Length: 349
Image (cartoon, rainbow, N blue to C red):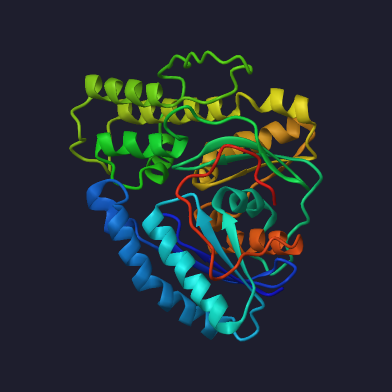
C-alpha cells in the first residue's frame, strides 16, 4: 500500500511517501540541530514544540511533491523516544488516519532502523529482507546487534551505559566542538593518528559471553586526556592542535574497534546472509570503511544505508509499517499509545 510515514521520536521531524514496493517517492527531514546547539543536547519541551511547527509544513510539501490523495496506509513512530515528541507524531497520525478512513500502523523506531539499509533513494524498490541479517543499530541512544529474520528482530547484545553516538557528542561538547558532535569528530579525526593513544577496554562480567558494550569509561578517559594536553574548551575549535586531532582519531578508532569486536563471533554463531549497520553512527566514515573491508574478507555482503537515511527519517518508518501491515499488524487509530522506552525482548515484525 502507498504509505505516508511520520517520524518525531527525538529532535528531527520527518515525513516520507513510499510506493507499495518500498520505492521512496518523497522524503524530507526538518532538523532541530541549530535550536538545541546552545544547550549541547536535546531539550525535550523545545523538541516537541518544534515538531508541532514543522509537521504541518512537511505534510504540505509532501502533498505538493508526491500527492497524498492516493495514500493507503499511515505509519508513525510510536517509540522509543522522547514522550512529548512521540505524542506529537502519534496524535497527528491518529487524527490523519481516522479522518481519512485509512489504516494505521505504529512502528518501533529500532525496527525501522533495521530495515533502512534495504532502502535506496535512486527510485528503485526496496530490497527484500533476507532470511537472516545480522544488523548493528548504533546512534545517540542505541548500540546493539540484532538478528533480523522473518519472525522479527532478536536483540543479541546492548550497551550497559552510554550509546556510541552519545559518547561522540559528549566528548565533542567537552572540547567545545559544538552539537551534534559526531560529524565534527569524524571529520577532525581524519587529520590525526589513530595509534597515538591507547585506551583500555572495559571489563564486563557477563555470564552470556561478554558481548555487551560499555562506552562511559572511554568517554571519561578521552576527556581527561584532552584536559591534560590542552585547555578546554579549545580556543579555536575550527583548528585544534595536532595532539587533539590525534586524540580524536584514536578515540574514533577505539569506538569503531569496540563496535566491531563482537562481529566475528556473532557471524559465526548465526550465519547471516548479510551484515548491515544503521543509525546515526552508521554515517561514520571509519565504521563504513572497516565494515566494508570485513565483508570483503569474510565473503559476507555488507549493507549500509544511504547517508541521508542514517539519521532519523520517515522513509524507514514507512517501510517498516508496510512490512508490519503485510502481516496484518495494524493499530486502532483511536487506541494507539506511544512508549518512551522499548522492552528488551524480541520485536515481532
